[in-house]
Amino acid sequence: MGQVPDWFWEVLDSTRPRLSALEAWLESQPREVLQGFALAYLDAAESLIDFSEGVLVDGEAWSEDSTEDLCMWAVGQGRLFCHALATGESELAEAAQAFLGRASPLSGDVTKWDPEVSDPEHQGYQSPDAIVYGVYRTRFAEDLHERHLDRSGCVDPGV
Image (cartoon, rainbow, N blue to C red; front, side):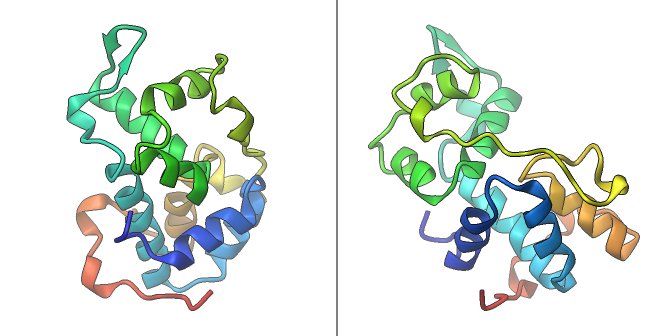
């Protein structure tokens, strides 16, 4: 997870579990920082596993989409949770059990985000990985798509 900037984790960890706090922080940032946040989130999730490989849970391999959902959720659990997964200290299959709401050695480390948002236009973007897309759309009247994210133009907000 070396490519994920520290400021990203500082923002995520300081606003968790209040999605409205993350929403407010994102609303105060310039376009390039929102792009950087979205990229950092994707980079952190992709550092956990190649989504196309799937994760083995209860003897069955999850689909690429389900594996991506799991990894995005795991990033939302913060730096320490993700670091444990990325280094092999914890297993992604254990995280999957917690993701599903089942008993897991990681269950005690899970934080449920409060889905409340301040702006009604952000309804439907009520997760830590999605809220940046709602804020971007509201502020700049355009969609923030992965294909439009340029790694070279992202700005460190100096958190």
